[in-house]
Image 1 (tube, rainbow, N blue to C red):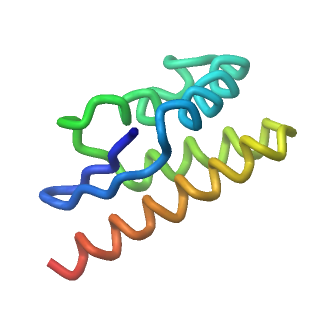
Image 2: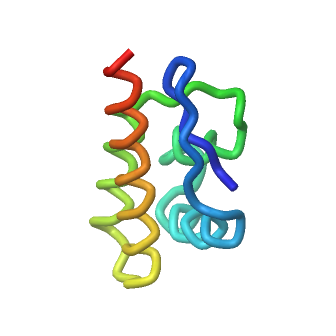
Length: 90
């Protein structure tokens, strides 16, 4: 399972098998060099850059025609927005 971390806020997101599908899609569009923040989500101690991750999610979704991956990216986006919301509440 991947975790989005903003400050002390941690939001669990996609499961391992689901995230592998996302990483495979990212691999077809440049992999880790093109999507470093997305790939960093496997490190639960790494803090997430919300704006940067949102950019990567948008770029990956725009370049990927797989409906299943689109659903997973939507879930990841929703979880990122939840983490931002909770973190901003302080």
